[in-house]
Length: 97
Image (tube, rainbow, N blue to C red):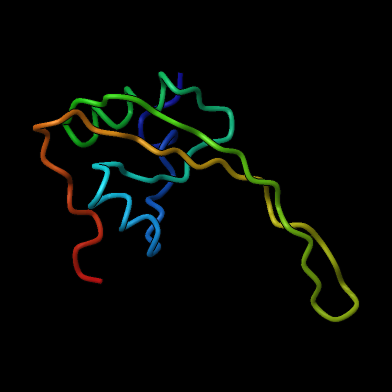
């Protein structure tokens, strides 16, 4: 079994991610591609000490990139939207932006 820090790779700090965080009480993370929704839920609950209502995930395929005559693909990755239960305090992982 993976640890919670291997499942949650990093928070997605974008304008859309911050708007979702403030309006819908939802945190956005880049997670391990093989992680399930229950593993993501347990990881967020252990790291941030909050109660999770539900988890939505989406998979992204890596884009083809070129650098001169060399080409390759960016890696595939998975995004998770984690909605907290009402009454839970939102963690401040991106407060100085």
